Structure formats: C-alpha cells, structure tokens
Length: 85
Image 1: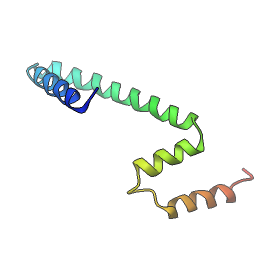
Image 2: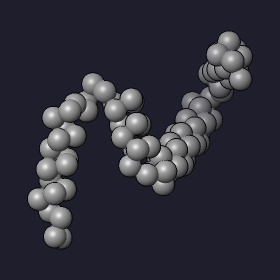
Image 3: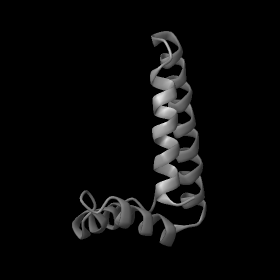
C-alpha cells in the first residue's frame, strides 16, 4: 500500500473514530494499543530469530541516535568478560 493510500485510510478512520463516544473511543484505543504491541513483538521475534546480523542491522539502523560504536564495543567487552557464565 502506498503512503498516500495509507494516509487516506488513517484520515478516514481517525474521523470515524473521533465521532464515537468517549467510552467507545477508549475501547478502540485499547484495541489499537494491543495490536501495535502484537505487531511489534512479532517483528522483534523475526529480527531476533534471524541472528546477530539482523539484530545489529535493526539496532544500528533504527536506533542510531542511541547506539554508537562505543555502545557496541561495551556490549562486546561485557560479553567477553562474562563468557564463563
């Protein structure tokens, strides 16, 4: 689905949902919250199951502002220091 189609659907359903009463809107938000968590958990599982290269690609690509070479070097040093455990 292209970005314009996605935005059209987002706008359509946001308008529909916003017309619902507060109780209905709260239930919709709870359901959407659960769906987002489920989808991201499945994505995380796929990334983790694909191995180290996949994990590094995701972490470095998606979280570049938080993950630096220093962070990765510390992770490697920690893993080596605790190898016997």
